[in-house]
Every structure is written in structure tokens, then in C-alpha cells.
Length: 193
Image (cartoon, rainbow, N blue to C red; front, side, top):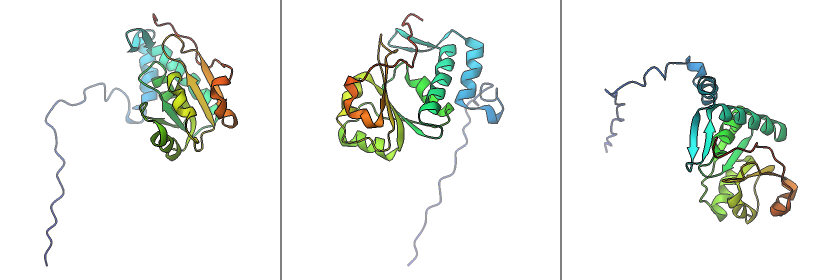
């Protein structure tokens, strides 16, 4: 019996525009998000980079400052080379935390903000998350879980007008999330920045 094996698909070469001078602006070794952020912060400074809900503005310079401040906090709290879970929506803190995890150095693990129950618990456990950053209004979903796998630390960030409120929850106390004192780590920001 002869079985025919189909040929593997050929890689198509596009005839469209190349990526332009921006793609080759940096040597290959420097084409990382962190390097580009630092260069953009030096070039554009306090100009807006990201705007959330037409009110919360993250500038290039502030993104760089927060990224490396968060990287230092991650390194100091859980050490380098760990997984950092982001249980956040599209919000002011997302990019600095994601990039801070990479700069720590570590791995940023964005989680679906609409995940709940066993699905959320499975994602956290399978991703070996050591530090979990949670949006304040999603905290009840974390508190309802039976466990958090290898999570050593949970950090809760506020939303809207309260992004300066951050709660640090050591692993042994994570069942009492709502009763812990607020420990500010992230600086306050103005929606009018």
C-alpha cells in the first residue's frame, strides 16, 4: 500500500513594504522592548505614550521610570528569573508591570481578566507564577480560589483614580486579602498628566 505524503507548504515571500528604517534603527542585539522604551523615553520624554479611557496618560518617561522601579521591586521581593502573573485589564499599570517583569529579569504572564474559578486557578498553577499582580476589582476572584500554586506574593493595584494604592500580601497571609494595610509601591499619577 502506498501512502502519499503531501508536500510541506512553501513559505510565501511578501511583495509588500519592508518594515522600514524603524526596524533597523537599532542593531539586532538591541531590538528589545526595554531598549526601545529607553530610547523612546530619551527622545519623547513627557509626551504621551499610552492613554487609557481618555483620562489616564502614561508618558514615555514615566513608563521607563515605573518599569525599572517595578523591576527592582520584583528582584528585591521574589528574586530574578521568576514568573510574574498579570491579572489586569488594559490599564495604566499593565505595560510598566509587564516590562518590569522582563527587566527583573523574569517572565511576564498576562492572564485573561475574564477567567474565573478552576480555569483561573489552573492558569496560575500551570504558569508557576511567583508574583501575582491583581487589579483591585478582580481581587474577589483570586480570594475565591482554593490555592495559588507556587505564588509567593500577591500585589493589588487600584484602578481609575486610585492607582497609587498597592497591597503586598505575603503567601502565608493571602486568605485575609481584604484586611491588610495598604503599602504604596507605585507612585500616584494624575489622569491629567
